[in-house]
Amino acid sequence: MGVLPRCPVSLPTRSLEGVEVTPTTPRPGRTIRSANRIWPPQTRAAAVVMVGFTALLYLIEFVDVTVFSQRLDNDGIQPRELSGLDGVLYAPLLHHGWAHLSANTMPVLLFGFLAMASGLRQWMAVTATIWLVGGLGVWLTAAPGSVTIGASGLAFGWLAFLLVRGLFNRSVLQIALAVLLFFFWGGVLWGVLPGQPNISWQGHLFGALAGVLAAWLVSRADPRR
Image 1 (cartoon, rainbow, N blue to C red):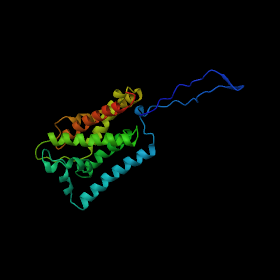
Image 2 (cartoon, one colour):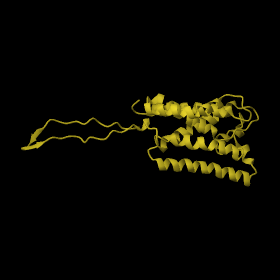
Image 3 (cartoon, helix red, strand yellow):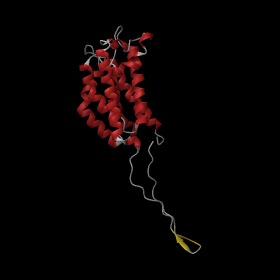
């Protein structure tokens, strides 16, 4: 995914029709493989994408509250019901009130932005993996009669992706970032365990597992691996 700089080569001097020629290759500067980056290469574009996505969540919640009286909340994931399977697509976009959305805002912005370190295309693939695999996990395992909504599954998936990708990539920089993230945000990982009422631990758990899967798939897609 990234290209390592070639070692400079200096060929022996030779004579060509009486002219001294010493062909050399230019010395490229030191670069970091895209697979090992910890910061988006196009910072402004990454920030615009995440702010735009978060603004979309707020717009949907505003429409849900003002126009639909929060009836859109019923369009989330309804486990093991074919009619509720399309909720896998909608659930991360819906929230049960402003407090729910507010609690998810900072993790979504931060983790989504950092997960864009290898570019928008890879981020879209990682996000799609977390979105679909995490949602299907909820659909298969959530309590009967429940409806699961919220972007916290995405946030857990991005966080798990950031925590483990350095191990798969053997990147010291990414491992250092993972340690820093774990220090500040590691406590939220308790959310993958059952016990908190009205909290979808299945969404958190399968979002995190999907993030690990995405990190592994990304490392396998690196042509140097």
